[in-house]
Length: 229
Image 1 (tube, rainbow, N blue to C red):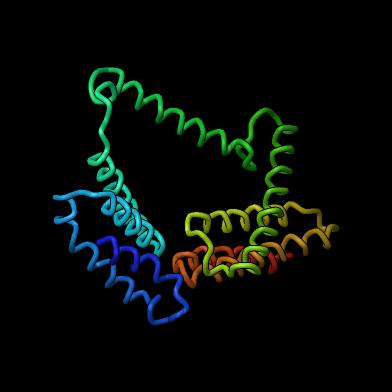
Image 2 (tube, rainbow, N blue to C red):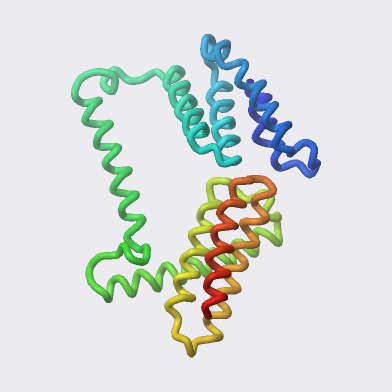
């Protein structure tokens, strides 16, 4: 199962068009799933890795629901292999501990959004500062994308970072919209950065097809702004 799951996921990085074709990758995934019942009867660490790879495969082709399902199965398989401490298994300590952990995750997620334009609190000065921080970060991301493309090619860009490219492009578009009409040079620089994000998404779509949907959305927004300028 692990072998087939690895091929389903890893063949996306092949230089051979036949090996990375969606049809062949789907066949590898199908063969991997045929071993599910057998593997769960005799769970080993290879099962955990195989399920996680199947999750990555499905998410990479845009099948998020199926991908999350297999990631959940991978987590459950891990629980089969780990000796859980009795204190975490029974009693109120386990329940309260898990709830506390989940609240920490939620708080961390909330904190990470505080510097997003439109989400910051504390008045206009804090919001202006947050917008500047986000705009500065997007320019750094664009620079890093260009470096990655030059050194590795976008074909090998991590799947779980693709949405960052799209969000970066959206933030830059907002910056272009709010720029003063007289700031033509700044506007041109920002739109060129958006085009760089678009090229990056097109490049990653060779490995992760769902990135093409994000590219189409970003391109539509970019063309709309260019038409209205």
